[in-house]
Image 1 (cartoon, one colour):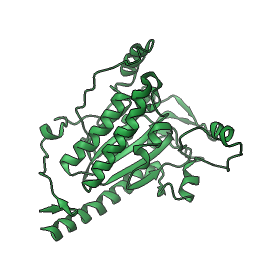
Image 2 (cartoon, rainbow, N blue to C red):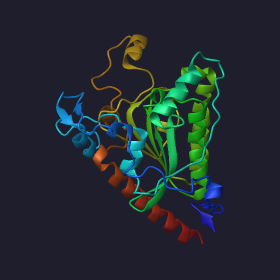
Image 3 (cartoon, rainbow, N blue to C red):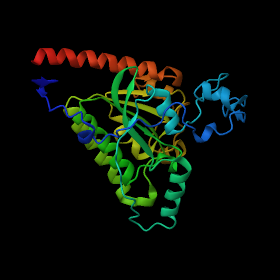
Amino acid sequence: MKYFGKQKKENKTSTEAAKVSLEPVMNANDNLEEDKDPDAGFTCSGCNSEFRLSEIKKNLYVCPECGKHAKISAKRRVLSLADPGTFRRLNVEIPFKNPLNYPEYSEKISGLQDKTGLDEGVVSGVCEIKGYKTVVAVMASEFLMGSMGIAVGEKITRTFEVADKMNLPVIIFTASGGARMQEGILSLMQMAKTSAAVQKFSKGGGLFVACLTHPTTGGVSASFATLADITLAEPGALIGFAGPRVIEQTIGQKLPEGFQRAEYLEEHGFVDQIVPRGEMRDTLAQILKLHEKRRKSWLRLEI
């Protein structure tokens, strides 16, 4: 039996083959760092309106007044998307490396691991979104600005490999300042590595949806983040390679208003659709539903 015009691989859905955790993690009642003081105040960086933290949390950290999308943690992002109790982490343990013997790098990583509860700058796992199963990776801007080093590149690559084995779509939320300078050239090599993983996954008929959030810059925007079949973005997200100031100094010209923002990129065909955070779960579920129907129709045709 063929799959999307190619020989269908053996459907290895066991947790052992897919390297998926046996137990669900990150449930709705988990205590996250930003929930410690629900009565604390929250000031919108867009319009300076003030709210109670509990109020802004219910609105997924989007300002009710101006619609400004504040940054949220990777864990909060997963909880806003996955059906309760369905997220199972990919067991990807990457030993820490400091290839340049960068001063205090090890201590910095250890401190961030203790503070965020994450092992690195991306969280990946298998979950269901309104009943549709998918592999999800969420970059963590709270972990060294989601910079892509050896571990992050390896985890992104294995996300595609696991999805390929399980015949599942991939959804990645990007939020990154780019390459991780503490790892030098080895960090830059992750651009080629993750791009190759996307190409291999795509050749196997897999669906890749990228959701670009603020900010998506540097080596991440220049690699897997811009290679998706469908590219979504949150309102106002900064998306680009180099910063506007660097570009202006390089080309000697003033950039257009809103350059590198999601709205400008949608207008020029770089982004397929801008999706507010409160609508993202429904939008992704609709995409997964359409993909599921298409996949089943291809299977029937190829039997």
